[in-house]
Image 1: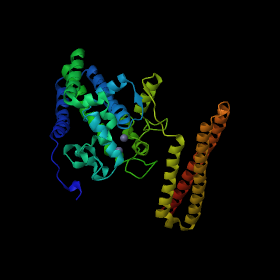
Image 2 (image 1 turned 90 degrees about the vertical axis):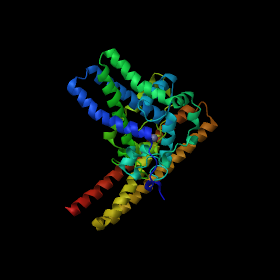
Image 3 (image 1 turned 180 degrees about the vertical axis):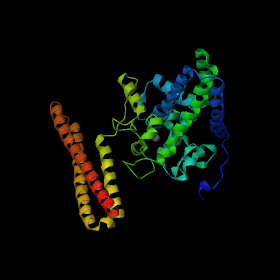
Image 4 (image 1 turned 45 degrees about the vertical axis):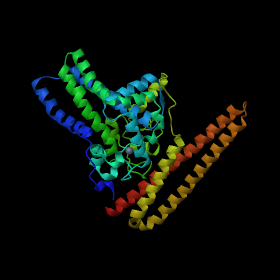
Length: 390
Ligand SMILES: [Zn+2]
Ligand SMILES: [Zn+2]
């Protein structure tokens, strides 16, 4: 029997924190606003703490520790660790281990700790409120983190650390700016609730609403609106197929402040070894997805455009052959590059390099052409269907 049908025991610490903080915020924050006024300093500290917590989770817990998409210097790791601790989402070790399981068994009803297949509520926060077997940590998937002294320090002193960061930091700021209760309520309480639910949206909404440009093998979606409140983590479809890329919004114009922060820090030497999936591999996934979608649409609507269906099918298959050929050419080029490196024509290497670069660029251009061709074919198909049904 699936564990969804069972009643797992309540996880009391999580229940207390996750249910009392929103309730308290709902009552206390408007009540205080009526009787007193929040200072500008309280609002500013709310925004700054929210950003610190958010980036601690996205750049720290997620992209640095769970996925190891880049390396960071000690001061950066320390600041991300503190911000992430303040967000109260369990320790780096616990969070990252669970997240690795989420990627490995994504959508599996019994193995994915926050499987979207178990509904919005479960994937948003229900999974934390009870001790489900799927949520049991198995640190065997995180030997690297168990060897990291900073990660283990945080894990071992987690409770005092969340108290210091959540009560001590706002209290200190509140006292310094002369608005103790205002800062406690906004930068302490409201910040925690907002930071919680913005992160939880990634497990719930980013597996429900949005586009799937790279893969439809799992429920993860790309969603710009979620990226806005999650420091760029809304591009979850890309992230689930290429989890080792430090970018989630991979296109330069996509809103991904976490990516900008990591890249920015690398320019001043504070982060390094930023991992990127090759442009061609990304394009390949995108074009493959377009082919798949065209086939699916043809299968569903083909009978509506009977006389054109055959022609469309032929165009798609011709395009697909060309696409496969481009992929083969790419593979051959790669092989050649590796062989050349082995042979080490020291003096000729530069010259050869330039020629290879040119060839790569040509193959990439062809890939771009395939992508655009498929877009046109799909648009044609949709227009025809629209005309039929009009
Ligand atoms: Zn996910
Ligand atoms: Zn991830």
